[in-house]
Image (cartoon, rainbow, N blue to C red):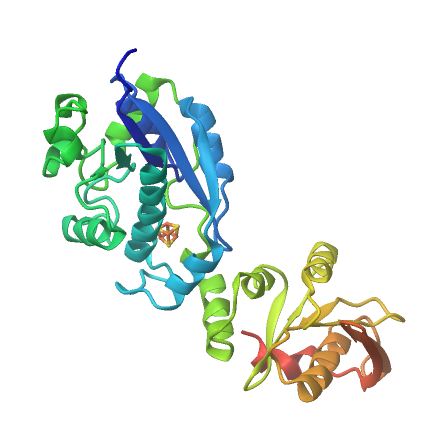
Amino acid sequence: MGQAKTWGIGLLSGGLDSILAVKVLQRQDLKLTGVTFVTPFFGPEAGLAAGRSAGIEVEAIDIGAIHLAMVKQPRYGYGSQMNPCIDCHALMLNVAGRMMERFGADFLFTGEVLGQRPMSQRRDSMRSVENLSGYPDRILRPLSARHLAPTWIEREGLVDRSLLLDLHGRGRKRQMELAVEFGILDYPQPGGGCLLTIAGFAARLRTLLALCPEAGPADVEFLKWGRVFRTGPDGLALIGRNQRENQALERLVRVQDTFLQAPEVRSPSAVLLGFSAAAKGLRLTALVLAAYSDAPLGAKVRISWRQGDTAGELLVKKLAKQRFLGFIS
Ligand code: SF4
């Protein structure tokens, strides 16, 4: 029986660098598997596509709950928005590392390039990521390996270090040349796709977590749809901006949330999130909904609401939208 191939498990974000990392390792006789992650802030689509492009199998793992817990309290803080990139990389490598142990694989790899990103790809932060992940010495960065200390897998001669690369810094020229050399034609832009890096979303997330520190992934899903309104010191509501958002909000409603509509006039839909103080929040949400309806100013607008098995109606006066701008988050 032939000897089992050395087996690497790679983090596939879907960007060009993660595809190149696979391609560089494919120059050696290795078994390679990809892993990509699902959280409320990014999905697996790009990673799965990268696997198809590189010709390896990719497993998508939902880490929404532990990832959100990490986002709330990252050890190494945030980047320019609410992106805790060092902790995020470490968490993904920890999950991949446990997968490596379960499968009996030998090493982990990523498409990181030394010095490419200001927060997470400095030499010291790469070391922090390794230590925090629980798998220092098992993480190979094929694109920058020649600038980094040899890992266990290289020292053992299971991966040939001389076939790895020495990319460094923010320039993308060599990656572009490699993409041409490997025939990679289609790939997403680096860093795209993570909502935590987007200022508007990060502001909404900060508001949610300030009001409800226990918020879970299902609460975060709401922030992707509609305008966010604070309904008081402890309440949050969302108002759809178009039919697609109204439908999405209705789909996401849980038994603890209150769903509001104005059945007699063209208007958006709204959701008052479950942790919000009900009575005051309900009235304010109804007023906002009426303000965003097509009813004439000053008209009485009937608002119907339901929460779980309970339902009711409110009659509110249509006020000008401007009255509520201070509540938008
Ligand atoms: S950009 Fe987002 S997905 Fe990428 S490491 Fe940072 S927090 Fe994680």
